Length: 390
Image (cartoon, rainbow, N blue to C red; front, side, top):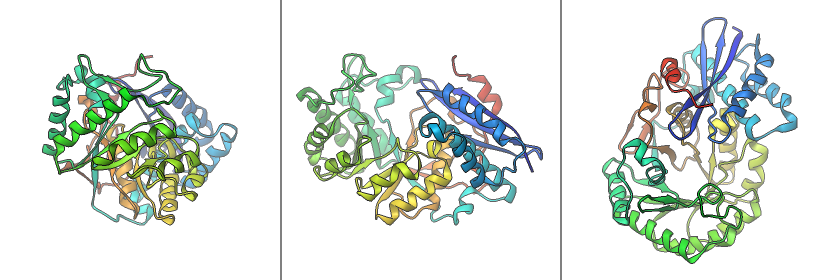
């Protein structure tokens, strides 16, 4: 069996793109991987094209060797766009290898440890504030609407949610410095106004879910350590799943962890064992977040095992299509230290149409697929119906 073609496809996902890699073989077997990046999809797909000549004619089942061949090819610009392209191809190669053997991908990594994985509803409120009108979702005009959304989360079977800083109104807003108007993108300072908005938001969600779940607040890269600490101490009264924030400095992250009463989650932007190593060695987090479409499956699995050696849990960073949901479910099936799995519930209507077997989600859990490979393929006709704008 030899690789005959490598392609990248960029799909319109409403307000962001989804990026997929298709690897074809001379025996007709096809593999799919997702490497979505909402900020530079053309850079990722262009890097996939750059790697195609390296792969044509090679045996797709030699996944590890091909991964390191690609890594050496891009060794002068590792990380970011390049690494996501490598990850998308590598994920498609695992799909081919598992299909050739007639087994799910997780069987290549020791078999499943669980049949289902608990989910948390991600970007809860964030998507409705930014894109609710496009999706026909209930508006968030006041904090009563946030309470109602919390009640909806529980009614639909979920016991955990994650939100960003959502400010209800007409129209509602979100706090993303550098992306949303009116906010400076570099200061990272917490104002009394922001603290009040966070307090009201988490209070409303807490009222909505009652004692039936936990809340995670994702602060992204928006605040410096002093600000995150101030927010963490403010939220001590609430039942928090974790505070989530990002920084490239492991010691700054450790400072936050040692100063707040909640659990801390981070590391979603890191790629490769080398980038994770200093964060894990310092035990800077309680839960290390791993992005499978950006790391690939092999590296994600090793990173998860590294975290286990430091008595840390892991959780997939996962806000993409259902193919990425399957990537994440396979990772969760094959590791012993899974905290919970992220998923977006508010999404475009063609999300389920885009894949041959949408994952089974019920009672706040995703069931681990049993079909060969990832358990499903991308439906190319649907993919072509939703091209990403140039």
